[in-house]
Length: 54
Image 1: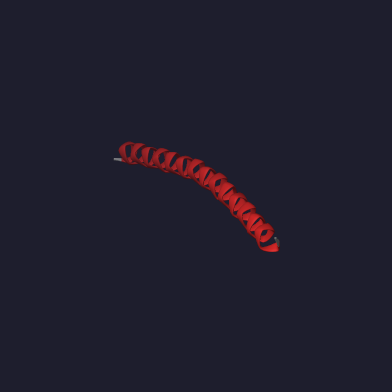
Image 2: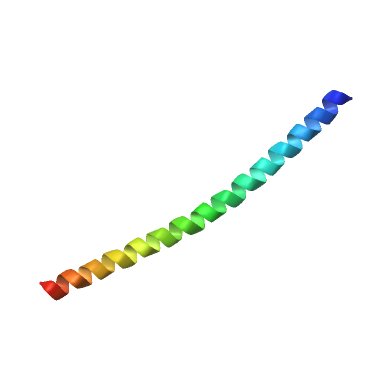
């Protein structure tokens, strides 16, 4: 019986870890989209500066 309880506890821990990893991955995705957008805007600003100077 103890083995079954230990298995259940381990499975619950694994489920919690998977949920946490999923939430972290979603947050990383949001941050990467924001970083990509910022980089694109920065690149566009630099192009404008170069055109203005040139």
